[in-house]
Amino acid sequence: MVESINPPGWILLVLWPFKGESCYPQIVGDLNEEFHQRVTEKGELAARRWYYWEVFRNLGSMVFRWVTIPITIVPLFCLFICLLLRNVPRDLSTSIHNWLITSPKYFWGFSSLSWSEILVGNLLGWSIIGLSLGIFSSQILKGHERLVRIVFGFCCLVFIGYMLHYLGRWNFIYTDKAPIEYTILGDGAFYLKPLWAFTFIWIGSIWIEQHHNRHRTA
Amino acid sequence: MGPNRTLGSFESMLLLAILRLNDQAYGVTIRHELHVRAKKDVTIGAIYTCLERLEKKGFVESWLGEPTSARGGRAKRYYRVTAKGLKTLNVTYSALKGLMVGLNLAGGNLNG
Image (cartoon, rainbow over all chains, first blue to last red):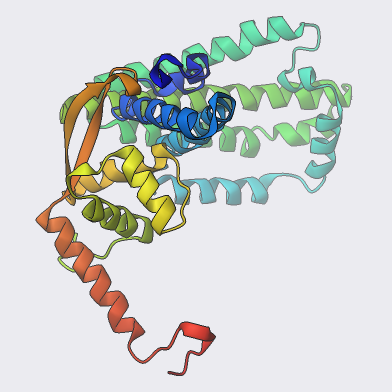
């Protein structure tokens, strides 16, 4: 009788990115079993409420599973921060303030484009580029996925460090007479795109690493 | 990994819960045991993440049970503590016991 009441399966879409995880069937099975226990003890409504809440709690646990930052990236990151603090002009804080108070769409440096155009043309585009790079490079260097992430991370840091240090793009803002928003925001887009792509390189690489690990243990 | 490696608190609790449950240790029962005895409300995901880590280290072993309709046709994964896991749990317990000698933790009096 109780087993005829099904848990709200659609909410499991939240856990969809983790469907490939080896423990996913056990997690869903356990949630279903406990849901049926709760229907008997506390009623259907309370059981459903519990189920929604538990799925979201498990989402947190599953995301945490994915966060595997290699220890080698920490000194590189510290070095980058030092480089950044050493080389940016004193009034950078004012620049960042000006940058942030403008409309978010300026953030990407495409003031004439609509949100959908920015989303599809830029965010999605760079996500696909990053994800593809992460997946293909990790497939080619099977077993060295961590190395792939470190190399791409290092390249990204070097690129941004190079732009800041040698080209002096932040200083350019004050020597040129161009409108402040345009110049600063143009630079913002310039830095953020590789960073955005790198995030997806990282995701793609971790995904492939987990895929390889699953097949190794199976 | 050294021979005297000790376990973290959550790892120890999981191993103890599995030991208590004998051959009936799987996600739901482990979660229930942790909730009732240790007053810890942890997610199933966190339990499986830690169990996978313990299994990789050779502290627990698992096997699949029969699928049931209450679980939507999904099988249970049962866990058992290995000899290596039991040994590490003992090392952890001995380390804690050694540090507790001479201390009276009840009532906040640390001077014995």
